[in-house]
Image (cartoon, rainbow over all chains, first blue to last red; front, top):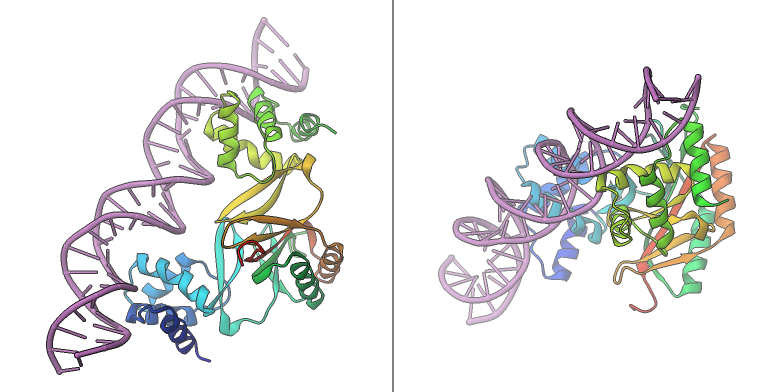
Length: 140
Length: 140
DNA sequence: TCGTTAATTGAGATTGAGTATCAATATTAC
DNA sequence: GTAATATTGATACTCAATCTCAATTAACGA
């Protein structure tokens, strides 16, 4: 399903409005590769001459996350980083504390153990994120 | 080893100074139970009449983390949460997005798989944090 | 299509956590 | 004790993020 379509379904279900500003923010999301924070998204909006206010971009991001258009990926320097869901297949992150590089990895065993823990605590998981901090091979 | 002693060793190794302000911040850390952010620590300092400036408390926290006196625990609402290391035995967290409750859990299998991933990427882990977001059993 | 209703927008003010400045002070090593 | 230097604190500042509120616009029923 296309991002615009996915968002439209979400908006309709919630009784909200699918404004041109929101559509333009989604276009900007599509133009970004890899991880981004809200500020970077706002820059992308401006770069594409989409003319959406800073406030609206900030207001739109949580909606995109709730709709599944973007995926809340990790925290870096106290900021939430997102990824466009179309690019997304589940993975976790290693963050190099020296150079800031982000390395993605997949480990299906970890996923399974998480589900086990949630069942045990009767916790309904909506998302999860594992960040391993340390020194990457290029910085040793 | 006591927190003050542990910090003293760290300070000496780094050629820094063990000031009375830093000692007082550690006293405040000890007075806190569970997770806290820097602002909460600063409140604790004031509550105990320790009279350390806001700036110094903020400056001290990264030192405490580097010294292992506190443990960088997780991110909540974009803020870094810490735990006093004496209370600390390794665990991860579930965060209820409705009530904000933090549930701790241990799953040694996950630890092992993390180490495996790090070896594979020649990544030297210094810390890690897993947060599972969702709805807790009291909020269903 | 028109009109009503309520959500949304945008510009700018505001908040608030965290950081920088810098003169005064305290700690450490000798 | 003295010199060298790290640290402190009051306050100014930064900057991401939110709030305000009048003007606008989407959604929907008639």
